[in-house]
Amino acid sequence: MMNKLGLIITIVIFSIAPINAKDVTIEGNYQLVIPPTMSEAEARETALNRAIVQALADAFGTIVTSETWTDLKNDNSVSNISFWQMGNSFVKGEWLRTLSEPQYTKYLSDKGEIVLEVKIKGIARELETSPIQLKTFLSLPSVDIENNRFRSGSRFTLNFTSPVNGFLSVYIADEEGGVTRLLPYSQEAISCTQIKAMVDYEFFTSQNGTEEQYTFETQKNKERNIIYVLFSTKEYSRPLDRLDSNSNLRILKYNDFIKWTSQLKSVDNTFKVTILPVEILTSQ
Image (cartoon, rainbow, N blue to C red; front, side, top):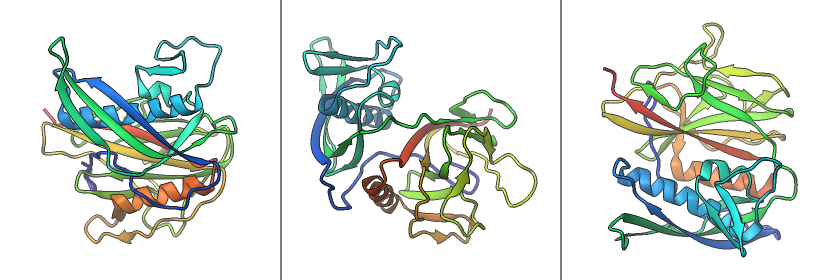
């Protein structure tokens, strides 16, 4: 959680928005061998995300690059994915929304391993243009090194660079089903922040002006958080949120946030959602 915020999510995307002519219904499944150190929540989130990428790869294929990647293969029309974070950048499709709640089944393999299987069904679209390669990551302030693990009480910086002009907003989701807007800042009456091409932005670090700063906070030994970075080459509308009197930040329900982003994806093929997972550890 954060000072002004609290976080974690299970990715369950519900209905919305009419299906465009180029949108198709696809299904997928993934079997994850759960490591001893992985929690149930982590296993479900990992299996779900890999199932989404698996379904996209099977439906639309993968983008061949000049580099060699061992995590994404295609053999006899069956795609095998080892790491969804890498695979998600190379599949030739985009997941728009989930049609029904994912179905999870846990069982023991012949080797005695605990396996979690997830089955999903959703609406997707084939990418017709080359995806915009964004650079975005979290770090400690004034430290240009990517970091996804923070101690409770730590401040953080969001680093962002785009090769094209566009518009940006940043949100964070909590385990109670709430989402908080980090960018644009709470006092700004705009729907998204304008971004210039090839400028290295560092958000949440300035000591001046209206820019807000945030710290992660948790009372747990470990808390998992998700930050959503939303970008489009076109200016987009804001969701129906409200000002929280305690944090003085704008908030909305997680399901409403997912519906809003899914609607934007349905009408804007340049709209991109980048997910940044974070672990917050108790200070020692």
